[in-house]
Length: 260
Image (cartoon, rainbow, N blue to C red; front, side):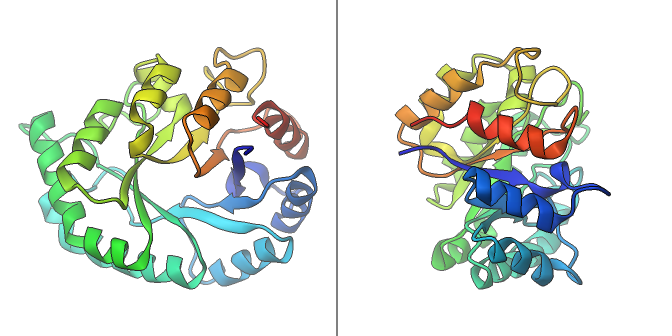
């Protein structure tokens, strides 16, 4: 089966390209899904309706606020639990399979092992509810070298350790290929060895976080073949800033990652 491709709507909409424009073109190209980072509660239902009008579905949104103040801080657990429970209910209402979760930034005097334990503790508080409702909690892996200084979930092994500690079929990783290329490389081997823990993928070219073209270093056709051959059944979401026309970039990304 081909990989199921989605796109992060904020990357491809601008003053000249409305959400309706982008969704219409995405559906024509063969995309089946869209996603958001966060949500504006006053417009969310309207945005979902726009996506669905074009035969697409929404597959991922952020589950809780604050990338920097996240699950590795017990002082945030009450807030995050409440936000995640609300987001899980929203995801069920709109048939959204995954929510993005954040470790938060490293805190002084707190080791990586302690951060793993605290993040797992926070996720355990809501994992059973996510299991009951059938919603994945995807911990996003981000680079701490260029884009998100101090972020703790910046290596695959750290994220896997959290998933193992929680031990829930609904706690997974959002493996961002761009971010993990910056932090550790060895992308295909890492994906193959950890595919059981991955609930969602994001793409972007490195360096620059732009198009998946030949001017960047990641071999996306090979990476996508490896993902498909590993038996992955989730979504691959394009999350990059186009160098030129967003609709052209959307088309080229789809063709690059279309693995039969």
